[in-house]
Length: 371
Image (cartoon, rainbow, N blue to C red; front, side, top):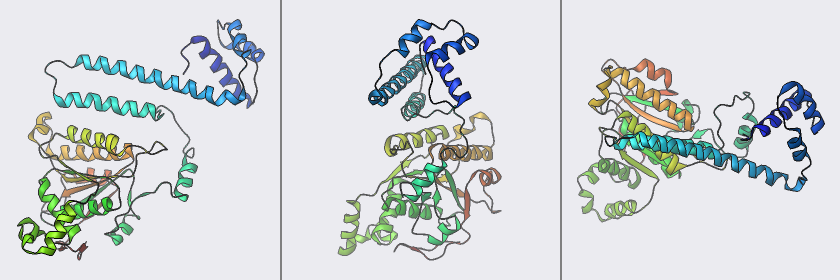
């Protein structure tokens, strides 16, 4: 991390000596001796001047912090230079999506730099598990998000929608996949955790009516046809719920390219969710409703639909792992009881639930028949 060549040589001499001997002390005589056999052109006068500096132990921590800040500043400057050079490569024909991707990648890199993330480090498998276990014991973190609406289902999944997981809900047409997905979003949002509902099919207002029905206990049909207005009690419930707050963000992704969907999810996680004091993504949930090819432009690369569906699943899985978040994905079953690209989906997902029977939704918050 040192810019000066002499500082780099001194650092590696000290590092090698401490690793070889397990010593806790070192002086410039040892460094000079080792330099004669290990490096060339070490400036001994410069080494003497460093060793003769009077650095108080009281000030040592602040001194180390200053070095670290300078280090991070250099990395940010280097990434800024790269961003400016990349920006120059965008011509007048560049699209809005290309510009978004360019700055999405830069934002992600800056976040990683400032979070002190170094993906080049190889760590022993047990290196961080002690801290993770202590955080779990002290309640500072959790394994995943628990959907309290479906306790039996949570038990089957191992207790929760785990972090870094892709949870697939599959079923044939009109069997209630979106209804279950919205019930999950409501449950997690009601607990105070932010939810992003990526919708490739239904309009926002209709989904909003579904959520209103769940939360107000007014039947969906009465909301959809506005007949609740004839019932003063229901009218009060609806208006009260509309003015309440639940952290569910709906994004209409109909017709969006796969890369745009992935980039938007990343942007939401980075800008709307953020990281905790330990540098981990805060608890949140992404609902992807549902798995399909959103636009004919996805076929421009001359690959089959089932391959595109597999790629979508792959990218969602990688996104879940990278940001350590749970993702719920709804998927349509065909007449043979499979999903397109089902083998790849089954391989990548953390679990897959098949809704085998039509679910009767009671908008009093209960699902009478599930699985």
